[in-house]
Length: 265
Image (cartoon, rainbow, N blue to C red; front, side):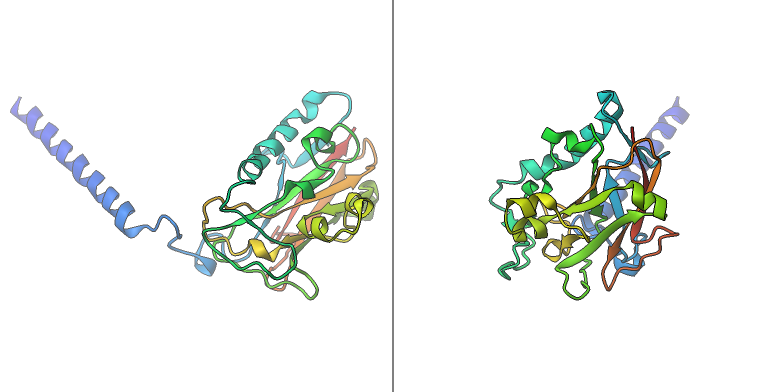
């Protein structure tokens, strides 16, 4: 009985000591707002990556659309709606600032992150099922968040550019007409027709949304790319990549870029 009591007390004290040590380590040594290792010293490094929504699965990068059955694309539209939910909920918060208007009025404020106007997403809306019921699917592009990183835009750009194209000439032909929708286009388009038409060359992640420093209410800048009138029943490979002076892009390894496949039935 004494031996049982001894081991019970010993292990209770051991667990209590270990729990207290972990608590003290988490509370005093680990900053909740800033990672202990950033930039080149972190696992992610200091080179932003590119990703898409929807992401089919961890096993496949094929996005399939069809007008024949809602079940085929329902998962994709649900994923897009879930991702965009905070953009809708935070839109009217007083803490949010209107940025990317190009008038030079924006000044970085950690307590007041940039709002993102989802009206810039036209025609990529839930009302249009994000184009997944036809031959013009919308793909949401976003940059991976890297703490403290600031873009060094190429000449004439207001932020990080992004461009999508077919992997081969046949793929590029199958993609149809490529158009981009972003905040730059939303604020600079002259007239309704120009707004609807979209940008033909590239999209822009506006520099006003950087740096990311774990701000409360922070919303990533997003770019929509639309592939209009794609060739039906053709397996098409797509590659998108970032363009900035301080972003290294390697299409083979996937640095600063992403590849996925589209199939319109």
